[in-house]
Image (cartoon, rainbow over all chains, first blue to last red; front, side):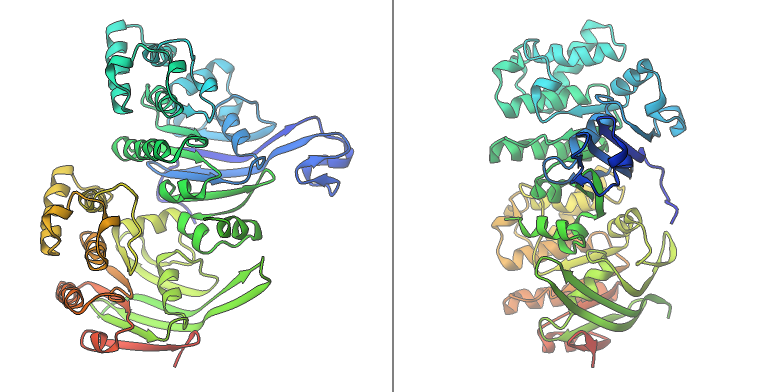
Amino acid sequence: MTEFEVPVLSVKNLNKQFGLGCPHCKNGESETLVKNYCQVCGTVYACRDVSFDVFPGEVLGIVGESGSGKSTLMQCLYFDQDVTDGEAFVSAYENGEKNLFQESSQQQRYIRNHIMGKVYQNPLLGLRMNFSSIGNIAEKLIAAGSNHVGMMEGRGTELLNKVNIPVHRRKEAPKKFSGGMQQRVQIAKALSNNPPLLLLDEVTTGLDLSVQASVLDLIKSLQRELNISIVLVSHDLGVIRMLADRTLVMLEGKVIEEGLTDQILEDPQHPYTQQLVHSLL
Amino acid sequence: METLLEIKDLSKSFDLHNLGKHIRAVSHVDIQLNEGEFVGITGKSGSGKSTILKCIYGAYRIQQGGIWYHSKKFGRINLADASERQMLYLRKHEIGYVSQFLNVMPRTTARQLVQQAILEMGESKSFAEKETEKILAHFELDQELWDSYPTTFSGGEKLRLNIARAMVKKPRLLLLDEPTASLDHDSKMKVKLLIEQLMNEGTTMLGIFHDLEFMNHLVNREYNMQNGVFS
């Protein structure tokens, strides 16, 4: 059925393998594979033929166990990794007509800085721990072409305020902050250029419950306020239930099931999804 | 009168792979619902009543049969073929669902909850604020509860909030999943008044009730279910 809306992000047949493959595991479909690993040549098929759309203002959840390919997928989308093959189109870039993975690294940098924001599970990857918090935001603003110090200071303060980092601590380095605060600085940084698309990779994993709650509330309120589209990767079904409109379930690099989040939780079809849902506390 | 919803030969079963079980919940069900009608479904628990409502709302996947709904936005549409985004649109704008349990975001106040329901439909913030106060007052929810979390509410208060949230959108089709279960007499009467008011406003409703006496006074027609089929 044709959609009545235009997707913000459209991913088609994304494949990512680590290793060259061999005659035994050609195309990742051979029976010699153990899960998504080839025992003969050691190739890992991290993402296999992944396709999905993200629509304006929606939160798309991606669940799956560790090693299912969720983070690799996010890394590919943010150009942290090169894809093996596949296509991705973003409506805010060239009318959604150009495959992002085929663009030059310069253009990819442009897309990263203007159209996407990403928050990593590990703040070390998303932040410069020794820079000031506001300096971290300025870095992203400068990357997108800002050069007015006063303006950047204003925007940085506004963003840190939005994520509840006290103004008087804005010049402190994230290394002095707690895990939850670091995640909030990351979120502020990711939002700095008003991207239409936010990639969140296990942002609440490892945080204690009350801090996790404050980060989740922040994400929800930002999403409502800015009507930003979010791809949310998590292995925590509670987080998915609270935030995601629609959900993909990944296993061994493949999308095995997708649906409305309550469909996934109340009427799971695939044996793995059923097992996952029934494991929910 | 025009048909708003037509369920044809709906069957639904569950395969529980890990238990090696196949459970048949509903078999070959047909329902027709005209605009402005209030139709009730009765039957013992486990007879498959909720399954029908969940199939309409899209919480369960429709595997066999069709559910044709006359949408304002999409025209006549088979919900079994509707895309996920279309379903989300219909939930936001046209089809409401009230269950006996209030499923809400944690740490969201009653006021925010209702406001969000209005904002989802694309209304302005000031309109949402005004409308929220109106409906909370209308549902006789104590003012001091407006800015507290629904998890602390009593069963009756939760339910009224739940209906308020669904009603404020003025849905074309409202699904009621045992909304009066576990309510005391007074609360039931309040819900009854609200339902009557919705009927007067022309809302089409499909409801499940345990309390037959309560239901018989309200519905235009009723279906009785036994073991997943209409008797």
